[in-house]
Image (cartoon, rainbow, N blue to C red; front, side):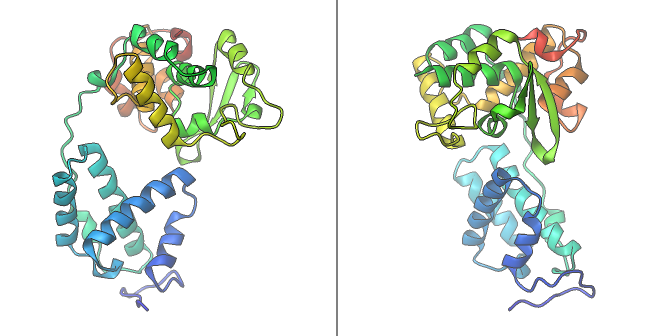
Length: 281
């Protein structure tokens, strides 16, 4: 059993597992799955418990991920998960020190332009989809900028008139307008035995890994790089909307960004009325 190491104690948690259970509270299923995998990687590498984590472990793990050729963004996301847990454990009094505060993320010189698909490329993806469901999923992602988790969890009762009620990151809800033609197309997928808009042949929700695989297969057929992902479509939505006149604030609301600075990465021109009005793939 691990003991509480600081002079104050606001929890009855006595071991790492109990602390992680508290830390996971309120997080989405997708976030829990992603963070759990990163933590499993770290603790398998470091071979220690939470109370034994030292700066050396974090630095060596970062260097280890670099030797495995992980993308900078992936490495930083894994470090962020570990640092978040350490901060939480220190905050509740489980750890005396938070060694994560001195670990720096890798500098990320990402060129988002490389991840923006042109109109013809997006239309080619849609045309090369294996079936109508996949084609409409790609079309919806491109027109709305939905995150992959938001799209696969979309239910029919989340669609009211011409708006999608989207439950996004951090438990935030936003409403996205979709064009009537796209809405009518989506309605052709409706199955009275399944609540989800996009479902498998077994009437179960699509899995994000299957969507990733589908997009890479379709991209290859469309003679595009197999690095294409749902997030590339999200990048493209933001860029095309701004280029066609949507305002920065409108695109921020459309994508559900927490900060206007995140949206500003796509900034080209400013004006317009509503972000989704500027996109039609």
